[in-house]
Image (cartoon, rainbow, N blue to C red; front, side, top):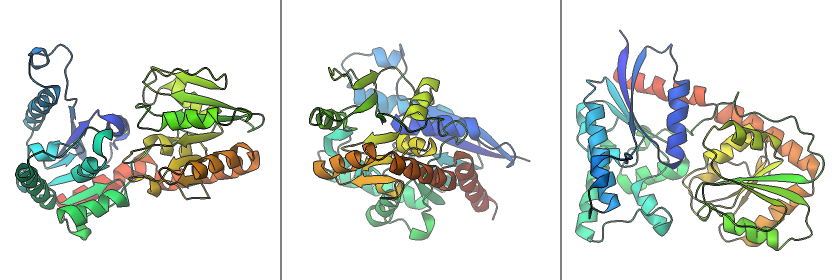
Length: 360
């Protein structure tokens, strides 16, 4: 008989891409009957959303509670995987009743440490925040296994929440290596740079435009993919709005590019960067949060330290001016993606570990 697993997923930021990838590529031959509990924290036209005077943050928490409750009611489950930042806090005792697991790109404390970038702040009353932290810690420690995307998030689980190191297994998110694959370009002519960041400011878009303005004689084409409105008179810069994750037009932009650049100011990880690697692109990325796990510095791209504008500029200039280096680094990036970021292999790794815990 198939095991019933509940998967609590989110549409927020990179977690939304993970949700789509898991639902599309979940293996059908592992004896698992998956139930997808997708939390959106907002319903267009919903009764709750139309209630006046209640802050949006409060409405989101209530909507999340409603969706989680209705989702878990579809059980009973043999195990539950939680891949939502807030779901564990909503049900801290659930992990003691049902074998529970967590996938995560960041811990709550790490989100708080980013300050205003994510809008996630600790409670202003220290005693209340301490109580919430205690509940989160107990919930994490009640889980069978936790699967952070990066060593950065793994360290926080151990150091900040008291989780046993043996219960933490780092598994990065994956991408569809058939969908995200190198293009047929010759890497000849002016280099094509690609930036993909829904939140333009947080992802370092302004930094990239400042760099372009300070290099008026450098020949390149920069494609910017974002949901935000961006005004730029530089003829080398082309802005693309309205593209969604796994959009075919977005995939084509990756396949036409020569290198990927993301001078992000705050990030937990970067699915866009591993999509770029799968597309055979060298990546220039800020070393922040969990991003240092992604790039083999000097081999598949370059990592620059936050605020190091000189290092960032030098890395971009090196790749723009050296087509052979772009090609060799891009090939290395693709090979690394095949080894570490295959979504199907990474799903199997996690689900297999879940089943080992449920059926020792």
